[in-house]
Structure formats: structure tokens, C-alpha cells
Length: 111
Image (tube, rainbow, N blue to C red):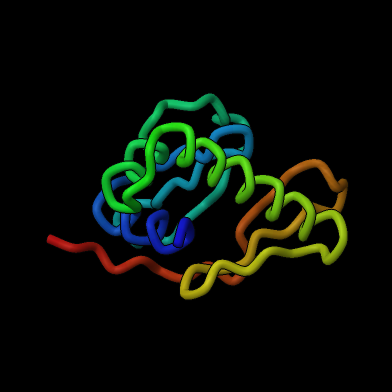
């Protein structure tokens, strides 16, 4: 569910912070997506989307984000990648310090 919300949000907006993980940034005008670990501070947008679209309360939304971040980090550490359906794969850089999107999908912008 969370990956669907992330993908849908990025079809209409340029960036989305996943607290404690990083930020997905849509490159304009081509629509490719990059990922930055530098911007990890919670701006409340993803939690608000989960409350609004996922029918969760604030505490449940925060828990869902924490589980997602744990799942991504666990997959990266143990499998070397985390696939987001229809989006691309998060992988570790050669130095095992940064996450980036490989095989990115171009997001189709909704007008």
C-alpha cells in the first residue's frame, strides 16, 4: 500500500520524503526519479497521505512508515536491493553508504 501511495504522489508532485530513509525526487521534464538520503527529516506529507488515503490514524501511519523503512533497510542489507513495483529498485552504492534507484521507471505526469 505504501509504495502505491508513493508512486501515485510522485505522478503529481516533484518530491516526497520518507522519514528516516530519504527523498524521492522527480527529475523534470523527463520524469525519471532519483533518491537522496540527505533529505530524511519528516515533513508530515507521507504520514498525512496515509491518514487521508489509507484510513489510518496518525500513530498507525507513523508505524506503517517505520515498518516500511525497516523493510527497505533489511532488504538492502540482506539482499542488496528493494524493488518497488512499477517504479524501480533501490540498491546500495558500491561503498554501501548510499541508496539509489537503478532501472528507474519514468513516471507519467498527470495534468
